[in-house]
Length: 183
Image (cartoon, rainbow, N blue to C red):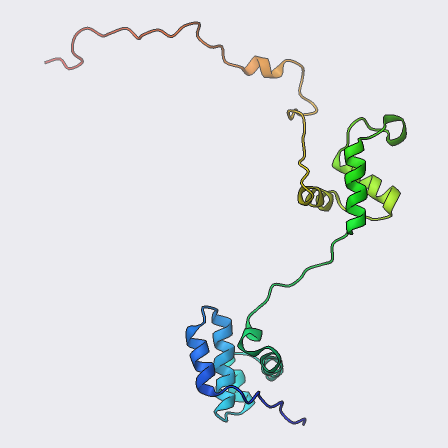
């Protein structure tokens, strides 16, 4: 069995318990209390039970704590996948949007997201989904403009059939004579 990784000497159990009491992050507090038990001489298995994790995770906490201090025990947001379009690609995309499509060359009279997705594949050899293209365009400051939505099977004049006619002039309702209550 390998030797345990020692904890950094510039902290004590009291320091870690104080940090655990002051933090608002419950996970960081739990990790700090587990490491405080190690500073007090507890075995790694006891620290794992305090933290509710395995020995390997306690070892990972010790490595993070040794390199970054108490801040290393805070959960960080995962970086996620790399962006599909580089800055050069975004500049080329902005140039093609600003210049507008040429009907004879591009086969469209206005750019749609699916057209730009196809253009990205044809010109840049980047496979990008329409959702990702929309997200990239929003990040670049472009907004999707569309005509008033209409169902493809909607007959002509269907909207006018459902419009309610407005009264020609506002009129006062008739006054009632007599009481509603009769005795």
